[in-house]
Image (cartoon, rainbow, N blue to C red; front, side):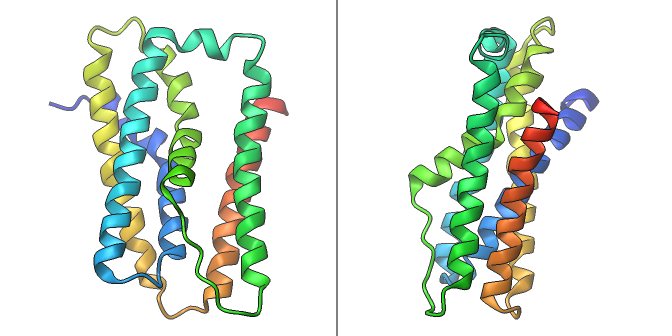
Length: 186
């Protein structure tokens, strides 16, 4: 049975992943239905896996990364990933020729990892909880389901012009990068 603590923590940790799932779903509007489904399933599985893995890792050894001398630069690196993705997407939105943005497995893997950094930090607080691996699995399932809903919701925007959807997706990525900078440096 899923505890209230893991439901609340899972919901809070899944918000960033859900926003990214929504933005990537907007970028995938041009795909066939079968390809959208496979892509969405892959994205949601990656986000769920990384959220669970990072909570588990944080509960066992996350303090080594967060409190090391490199922890300060690590957050800057993660935010630069989101800014880089945002710049790429906004640049694509201003091109006059219709070009499809294709997200390979590696960029999706990097995004899943980058959105799960907060799960690593949250996992540190679970080090004293008995059986943190069960809670990590619950958080992973909750993240998967929330991301699936967000990815599916992105298909409601089929009728909007693609260039504006790309700009909205870029704003989301800029927001996530700025959020990391704000939380860790300001």
